[in-house]
Amino acid sequence: MVGLQYSACLNSYFTASKHSLPSALKLWLPFTPTASSVPFSLSQVEKPSTGSPRLRYSSTAVAEDLSKEEQRPKKQLRSPDLVALEYRELNLPRRTSEDLGHVRIRQHVNPLSSSFSMPVEAPEWNCVFKDPTLPLMVDIGSGSGRFLLWLAKNKSGFENYLGLEIRQKLVKRAESWVKELELGNIHFLFANASVSFNNLISSYPGPLATVSILCPDPHFKKRHHKRRVVQKPLVNCIVDNLTPGGKVFMQSDVLEVALDMRNMFDEKLDVLQDVSMVDPNMSCDDDGWLMENPMGIRTEREIHAEYEGTKIYRRVYLKLVN
Ligand SMILES: C[S@@+](CC[C@H](N)C(=O)[O-])C[C@H]1O[C@@H](n2cnc3c(N)ncnc32)[C@H](O)[C@@H]1O
Image 1 (tube, rainbow, N blue to C red):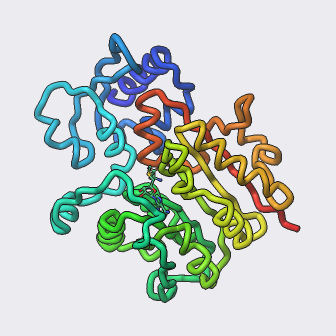
Image 2 (cartoon, rainbow, N blue to C red):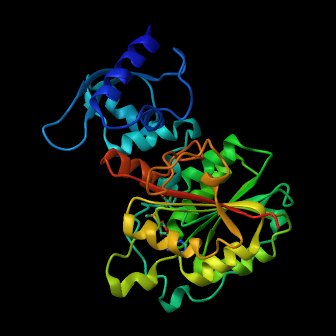
């Protein structure tokens, strides 16, 4: 019954919104719903006078962030609620951030400042990963870390996951979540990826299978473009270290930033290939941007951007085997 009500509401949502069904489905569900797995019922779909369509729901039990709202009969679903929903499987404890003190995060840092100029030392890989010979995925600018935690939890045994993040408080909290979840295949490092990537990755015992750079800080002003994390030396370093058949997944909700990254990776098309050329399941729009996030889980920035109705510009590159 709940499932029926839910899918009827989703259908109205697809009709009411500009999302295609698959991406709208991802907006709501990181897994296929069943009557028992759906934690709430959508009770009303409404289009506000301006902006994207909004959903109202009555919640019965979802993630911690929603629990206070459960007493209220109806509530507008907001972007942070969608983040909680997307990652609800992780069941991340709220008390962790309280233990760490109030995690107030500065909006941006300047990666060119002298305090971020030294490469960090590589950890003892066998101390941070249960099996340090597994293929490695590195997420550059991992933010809160929830995206990578979700992958580590759901793909345990196949890959190791390393998040590089320049804001130390985010790393501290993400690492505390790693402990809480008792995962042996994920680690977060406080590092400026621009200066530390090579040092870290060249010492890793297994192959570098995937590098993701997802919604990097845009640094809009022209004089600040040099602060952007994707610069030619980092691109060279990623491509050199990537194992044959390995992937680079990049995306941004800012076209200019996506084009900037794309131009730099396109310069390496002698050793990289755009995945949509070889995988018919990876469909692109007319401008060559992937229509779907191929990871099965969205990042937080991506959730916020899609909630606002913003397009995400994505590319996946494969490293050629020879
Ligand atoms: C806009 S957030 C996106 C976070 C996440 N990837 C997402 O899509 O939700 C960009 C993140 O990159 C981090 N960052 C920026 N420059 C960096 C650098 N040079 N090295 C490592 N992290 C960096 C920022 O601190 C921030 O957490």
